[in-house]
Each structure stands twice: as C-alpha cells, then as structure tokens.
Image (cartoon, each protein chain N blue to C red):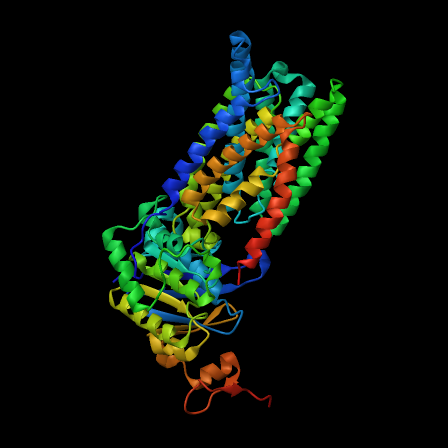
Length: 327
Length: 254
C-alpha cells in the first residue's frame, strides 16, 4: 500500500499555467489593429496611449473575466453535483444582464459603470436566490436545470425588451449584452472586475475543500459535519457577485464556465482543491488567447462569439472522449 | 451506562404517509444491532432518523440523553458516522478517504501519521487492494470497491455511534465476512452500531441484537435469538425449513 501524497502534478501545472498567463498578457498587448507595439515606437506618445489606455486594460480584463467565468462554473458544478450546472445555464448570468440593462433603462446609477455593476449584482443575486429556492425544494437536478434554462430565457427576453425600450439602442450594445465583448474597455472596467472577481475567487478557492465532501452526496456530507444548506446559499451569493462583475464589464461571454472546467477535469482529474485554482488559471488563459485572436481578425467580432464557436465543437469532442473513457 | 441512542414515541410521516410509527427503542454501547425487515418496512428511514437527517416533528430522538438538535454540525459529525446505501459517489479514492477526517480537519483534509496508520490497518482488515493515489475518477470503480472505500472513510476516525445502511449489499462473500469482523471489533471497543441487512444469515453472524421493523413499527427488539423461524415466516412470508432460513422457499398460499 502506498502513502497518500499530495496531488503531485498540481504545482508544476499551476506554475506552467501562470507562465502561460503572463505570456498571453505580453502577446495580447503586442497585438492589435494598430500593429505590434514595437512598430509604434517611432511615436512614443501614441504607443504610450495605445499601450496604457487601450491594450493593457483590455488584456487584464480578459484574464480577470476568463478566470471569473471558469472559476464560478467549476464551483457551481460542484455545489449542485452536476457537470451542466453553471451560472450561465442556471440563469445567474442572464439575471445579471437583465439587472444591468434595467438599471440602464431606468437611469439609476446615472449611466455610470458602477450603476451597471450594482444592477448586475442585484439581478444576479435575485436569480441565484430563485435557483437556490427551487433547488432546495427537492425537485431533482434535472428539475433545477430546466428551471434554470427557463429562467435564463425569460431574463434574456427581458434584457432584450429593456434594451429596445431604452431608445438608446445601438447594435453594438445589443451584441455586447447578448454575446459578450471586450471592445473599448477602460481602466474603470478593470477596477470593477478586479474588486468583484478577485475577492470572490479567493473565497471560492478557500471553500473548495468543502466541495470534496459535498460531492459525496447530501446525507453523507451532512453526516461529516458540512452545513450544506448554508454552504450552498453563501457560495451561490459569492458566485453571483463574481458573475455580476463579469457581466457588467464584458457582457455575457458564453461557454467558458461550462467548457473550461470540463477540460480541466478531463485532463487533470477531479479533486476540487486543485480543480478550482486550475480552472481559474485556464479560464484566464483561454479568454486572453481568444481575445487576442479576435483582434487579429480583419473585421470586428465580439469575443463571446468566438468562444461559442470554439467552445461548442471542443465541448462535443470532450464529452465524446469522456463517454469512451467510462466502463 | 447511558444509552447512546434513544427513540421516544417517534412519528415520521412525510406528506401525511407514516413511515415510522410509535417508535420507541434504546441502544446501548458495545453492541451491534441488526436492523431488518421486508422492503419498505422503514429500515432506511429508521437509520436516517437515528442519524439526525429527518426533521422529526413528533417524539424525540436522544443521543447520549441529549436531543439531536442540540448537537452542532461538527459535534454531531464526531459523534455518529454514517455510511448510506447509496454511498458510492466521490471524486477520487483519495478524496473519499480524506473526507473521513473532515469532522476534525475541516476544509483542507489531509491525514496525519496516526490516521495514515489507521488507514493501512483498515485496508488490511478489509483486504482493500487499491492504490490510494489512483488518479482515475471514482465512478469508474466497481460498486463494491467504492463501498469499501466509503466503509474505510466511515471507520477512519472513532465515533460512538455508527449507522450503516446495507453496507454489505455490493460486497462479495469474503468482504462481507471481513466487514463483519470489523463491526464486531468496533463494538468490542465500546461503540454502538446499527446495521441494516437483507441477508438474515449475515445479520445473525454479526449482530448481538436485532430490531425487526414491519410497516414502520417495531415488531421485535431484543436478542438475535428472537429471530425464530415462526417470526421470519410471519414477517417475510417465507417458509424456512427446520435447518434454518438460508434456503427458504416462497410460502405457498393456503
């Protein structure tokens, strides 16, 4: 019988992913429609503006939002013990969108980004609360997912109606809320994302050890001393906070919360103590690379469309290998 | 010695359907009680009530003379250990084993030297030949292997009350006997064990007491000697030959 050791490949992987993140950040600030950074060096003033005001905030925001989406997705999958349960599928992201757009419409928060953030947070909180109430009523997980899908469609429809009612409609706005984009992000977006996503992700990483116990099933988890109801409620609120930060700064970027945790699980295994941090890092890396790729295209498309285009087929491949790997 | 577990006039009737009725029973330390009865007799509900999972509205359930609801989550977790009949979930072998020390260690469960020693001991007692660091997903193991890992989780830390719902169901014959030894050993150290069984021969080989449930009520609670062929015939509606009940035949309608 062998000794129990810690997950041996965790630290090398975490370091490798962190190096990848830094690489992606450097790549991201060097690439853009105005050409690479060194080509702008004949005009130091312009290159300074491009670097500081355009590229760096956008690159950092991509890392933050990617990490927030993937980390929240991984955590919610664990809390509900279902690989399909993510904030976007349970309607939490749609709730954030609807809340933000409603605040836009009513003019609360004076059109500022922080007003949007508050609206997104309230919307996410309400939808997470609804999902929690539904989930704790013993309707089973498929009932929970169906309720989430219904809630999601309802709230998306509401968002669209609010946008149309606002009379300020521009196609880019519409795309932003429906597909998610990192176009023209400024430092204030970065700050909003940082103050919501970073604390939330820290909490989720600290809470990840409890998820291993929750994965044993409700009764067994309770018998081991986990206050499951409170744990679910508190952490769904934390996830709602992170989702609100992602949605208010980058719109509804799809598939990352679902796909990145799946990929991490398949490649590196299941233990949540390692799974949550690795999902965070991978999500940041993925969205950063996706956003860089989007900017290389000759025409402007929202990065959310690219993640969906890449994500869906990759997801199918992963599901297939997962099914084949099972007895 | 005070009783580890007491039921006082417990009624459990979710949605108006009584699953446990008028249930009064006392369980003392140092014994294995077999919980038996036909399907739907209330064995699982009884064990869940004993574990404190049910929101009992009528009657009281006491742990060491104190009502269950006065125990905190942690305190309860260290007092009673549970292995459910559907306990086959988990992430990896290691994560399930480490969950066994969660009542003491909290969120960063990892085994101390003494606990590691205990793990090896349990692995030898139950003859579990698994690599604790096996990276494969837990669900890719057989149901018997998964149950053995969960049993190891259950017995890793000491407790006063062990509640096991059909622990032997997915196990092979040898592992059922080894489990029986572990249960006897644990009882000899002063713990109280309640274990549900379908296999009466297995129940009788392990337990010193038996509680027979029928439609949510206690039919008999006492020494295993009270499990007579007449009783088996009346509760399970099977005929048992003089030699025993292991090769019982279906009762013919008269």
